[in-house]
Image (tube, rainbow, N blue to C red; front, side, top):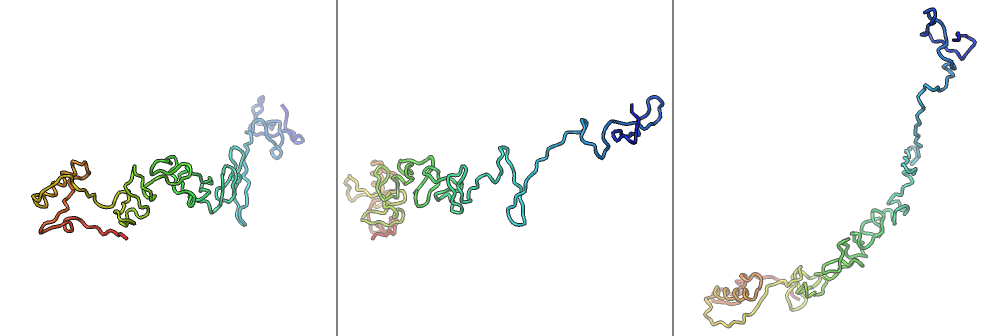
Length: 250
């Protein structure tokens, strides 16, 4: 055991140690080490912790921002930004402020394509995405133009009885036939002549109506009970018994 020596800077005095032989305090070295002002880390010191530093980056005069780093080593400034007018990374396009879901480059910086469910104005007429179809009323999957449909001005006999295009549903006709409604059916009432011959003893106007309805029912016409006879007596006529429509006919 070494006694404290003022000439030995390696010895540090510890007041709590006692001489094991005499039981009284003595100035003995507590450990062989450097003075506190020069002592470095020992095996009893906790390991140093590494601290991550964040480098500030200047974005505008008088202000700073911190640049974050992802697990793969890239920084946020390395990631592409949709809308900055620079197509990079996974971006297919970037028109900056001109990006639009009805334009050539969408708001997700994807090129507009037929089938993406977005209608490219001026190029596509329609786009139903996965529902595009060549069937009647559908949107063609190759061009995103309308397939045969009501309103195209062409009568598709399997589905339509008339088609006047933009005139459908307006009550306007461009020929001697009845106007066409929005479902490409005639905008009017069905008129038919019975094959049966009748005498004047019809039972009045109401009796004539019953005979018309019976004939319509035998023919399988829809709403057969709504038909009326085109007949007059001293008190009523088709002009007073039928609902009148004002149709614009050129």
